[in-house]
Image (cartoon, rainbow, N blue to C red; front, top):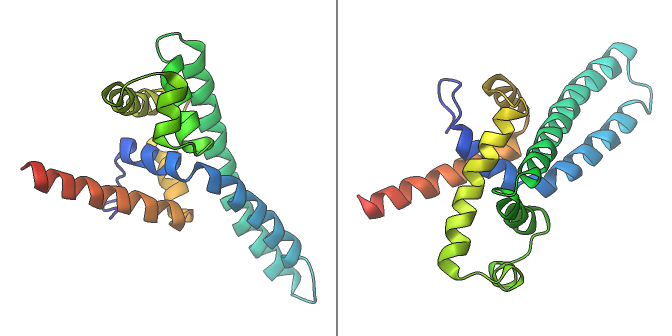
Length: 166
């Protein structure tokens, strides 16, 4: 649950990575909604309000995608983080399963999982470096309920893991 308008940035990054492919679907859906809003005999004021609401949501999604692409590029430029960027891209963007990634990159299980966790932290840092702020994250979270649902599932998973360890 997102309380007191605070979001755990690394958890948000996990949600954004998990939902990366849904961003394009969301952008396409909003474009379609804007087209539909302009059809028919709706009052002009209502059409303008709808376009404004959809436009704001569209801009937030586009901004998130932009920041994510910039962070991937930033990681890919550095030889120390390049392989970790590849792992994230293969797992979250290309949706390739663990076994295939492990074989492609010729790495043992423990190395894969260690690099994946390191990659998420590096990606969060890269997002900060390219300008993704807490304020922008909150604006995105306020409009993108599907992303909040992913965030909350990850949050519950983390709590369950803490109970098992503790």
